[in-house]
Image 1 (cartoon, rainbow over the protein chains, first blue to last red):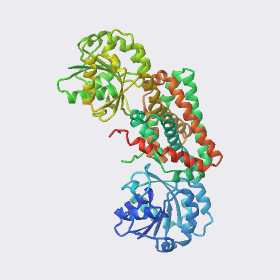
Image 2 (spheres, chains in turn purple, blue; image 1 turned 30 degrees about the vertical axis):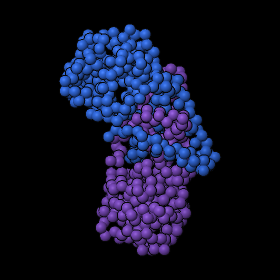
Image 3 (cartoon, each protein chain N blue to C red; image 1 turned 90 degrees about the horizontal axis):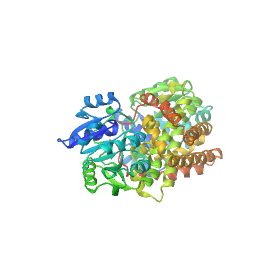
Length: 285
Length: 285
């Protein structure tokens, strides 16, 4: 089995690692526009060989894990080059723009639109880890547009990785993921910014930060190159979540300014039910 | 050594656990206005006996770990009852109001104002864990107002627990802790609220939430009874941090609405330096 991974970073590298471990007969080919990443991926044994688009016709599976803006340009060329039994999988955090872009592609049936809800705040080949996808959710969009045989091939692979599969349409995906993922990144980046700005002349102050602070700003370590095009492609939904988040923060501030501490207690008490919700989320080990 | 722990929850219970393990000759007495918590603390072996204020004159060390509003009423009565060789330690997240309240107390020299920067999002006796304070920061305020001998006794205890000790004045403590702790809690609670409100009719949607979301809303599990009086006592500083946070979120939204993706990239890229800052934070294991 020839598996091509285009974009050997956290996601592509972790998939390569799992696929190699679980399929001793798989050969992993890496393609990346950053030569240093390819070298690192070879050294880390994430891939068996480097390759390029000219060899894509020999691929059985292609995994595309690159920023979502690059995805729009690269996926049509990738699809142009694969054979008819090859399935092309993406791993992007936005789905509507990409699905629209590929809708008329003559090889649309070779593509399966995927979003694995898994990752860490780190990036690059060295961020790749074993078992990253175990127990995590995979969202698949427009499954009916993929050839039946190729759906099967992809599902087999994702089941091997241990993923829980859910089907959605691209618009619903983008709307909901804005709340449970994209907004979290903005809240975290802006929290980090607020504290860094305030405390820039007070280095010692970070001695006062504990694991609670670390947890809430963890996502502010994420890659700007990956996240900028996500916010661009999901602008409308993201702005809506931001409006609601800012309104809720303003309402909390208003309660404080009015000394309405019963109101503040209730706000927090009502939100405590997040405990029950979080119980269902599979965490990184 | 007779150690009295007033308020047997996450912090008091964890201290009790460590002190017992490290000092086989210590007897731990628990006082709590919730009888169920006292029973639970006995069953969990966090304390050796329950007790009450009438026996505080036999205490060598008193640890007060109750909500910061209760602290203002209880600490004067506690100090009234202790002997002159007893040191009374608190664990509150705000320091200025309490220090002011105790400033004229005839036994002010028996009190050491402390804030251990450690904890989890859980509460109650069952949340108590071993080694919670290992490697964490302890802020001590107005150390000069505590009797020399009692400073020593307290430092010995905190060093046993493995804490890194820092000295600050209460006003500086409250100002900076608003940024690195209090604001994180509000950002997390309001993020949880925004998502719960939006998704109340869409339970399946939490299947889409990953470990990134879990991390940013973790603090929204925290106890409202503990946090409401913290926000009340530190209102002025907290409102200031909230103003700045909301401004930063609005600026980010403005960049999005203007399609200024270079600007958005730069915002995130500049905040990535949080990586270096976080390296210095000791985490819970």
